[in-house]
Length: 529
Image (cartoon, rainbow, N blue to C red; front, side, top):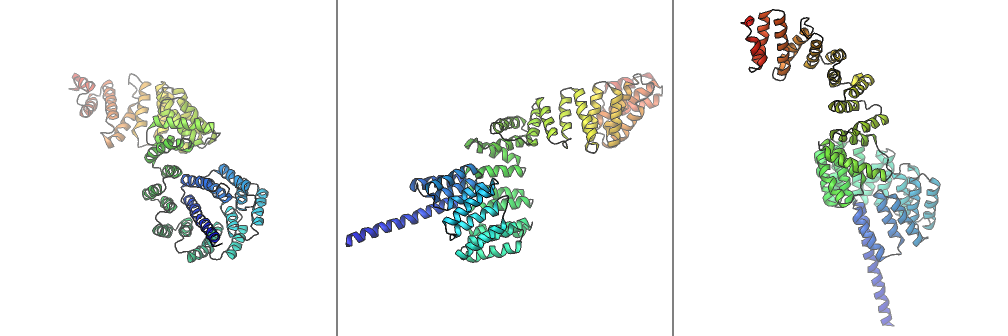
């Protein structure tokens, strides 16, 4: 009898300690999810499933891990598995209800939520809280129902700080900051080291753009638990919004150090892209892809970032890979995708770039700036007629956004086609747009010279004189144009037999360019002695 009693006690003790160990292991797995270490959490849940293959609750939290890592399909599979293992356990019905809710099936969601509440006899605070979170965090919110559920949970577990944190979240979604703070403080009154509630208060002040106070809360959370990676991520994103991008990057690196999971590295890479730290993206992106090539968006940000750093070969490489993988996955393309593909192609002398920039304009007619890129490429290819079409479109569609360079390049296209009349008209417009620039006067002078090849009419004279007037403000920068202007005037006055003036201008040429052969020859003329 005593022996049997001892055996029973040993079995009971074994079960007790097994339950404690298992509970700690499940909590550890959930903690990994909270710490945004989704891959590490997945491994922990897989081990739990091996140890407890029929425990349906494990599948729910495994599903939550997938859901928080933006994989709703895998999450649903886990919830379904949990229900198949134990149809009388309420928790996985909440997961299935959540999937229905985010997919717009309110009736299906309500059916599953009601099932969960019925199976728990409306006595489970966990069930109430989990359903409330769906209503709080989904795109289509039901804050009134969430607060009702959380008030019921608070009656069931009045000392559970999570309940009050969630009530605070609900009020925050209603932009009721006062009630949000009251409930966050209630949560912290129950657990002074509840870092999640502290972070929530920081978020509240961040939303209100009180970055100083928000930072205080994030710092406090980090002081309490320096291993909680999301605190560093939140502080990084706060600092980014406050314009402190370098400090933000340091916080994100700390986040990565605490959270070595691939999903964290992906998030850091995307954060660096948004922060316009393109060089960092080019360093981090390939590391991500060396671990997992399925993160399609990384190919995109690499294609964009390599372009921004001037590495157009790699920019085109990654944009091509992005288009291949996104097309295979059925992902829609953004206008910016075609833009960066097109711009990288143009930089690699691929004429398909013009076609892709045209697609951007078809998607967004306001992007008239791209006509300049298209025209500049065609001009480089000496396809002047087509370049003219795009410069004309840019100027005609949005004269206000047309830059002086657009007029200059358009005029140069006509000039290169030897259509000097149209070129002259465009350069006259350039002068009106930018009267302090030398280029309009120089090109108008050249156009006029073509209509007066023997220089007898002096059609170019007033424009070359203007070149000298404007260009003398920076002789070194404008030396080439000034030499051309003085040379023309020197020749013009020679033809007009005004030899003192001719000598004066050829001397100016020689001062600017002592080795100038034309000046040397002209000044050797007996008439200029």
